[in-house]
Length: 231
Image (cartoon, rainbow, N blue to C red):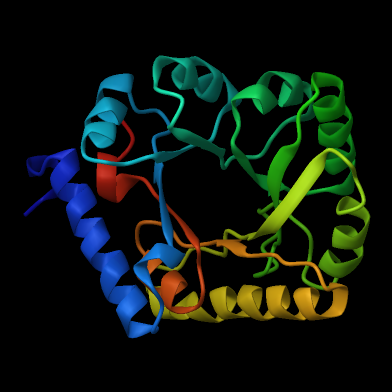
């Protein structure tokens, strides 16, 4: 059945089935994976439908959408900023952001840390890695990440909980598997070398989230398969 003919609750149920199957296939518990419903450009009414169906975590690309949508929903809803964070938007974004997925440079990390300190908060964040070396993507190169992480984890107002990546798009998820596997392997090496835990791996979207889960994703960012294509 076409997505537009299905309700948001039905779409969420279908995604849930896919997540459960991928977890079973990779011998992981269902609780090891969190679905982030990407609600960018979608109206509050659609988010309300998803909340009514039990969805808790939502991802926004733009700071303006994040700060206008977040206050309209209960405190228990978790908001993820999954788009590139411009430095002039940091102060506006941080109070509304439960998890920043896109810490993609040392300069940004330093400014987020400084502003978080001024606001009296600790910002939970993921370090963005350009694992597929796509010139169009933000993030640290694979060989840069260890040194960058060492510097970032010393910042007092940041809590680094893992890594995030957006690989080069390929319509065949199997062609993206290698990038997801490489991010997991990088995380494992970083944990072993530093002794710091990096439990979260944010990777996988509507067309490839099942493969991402099979390769270790703990956060999958799914939008169009839940809400339909952007209007």
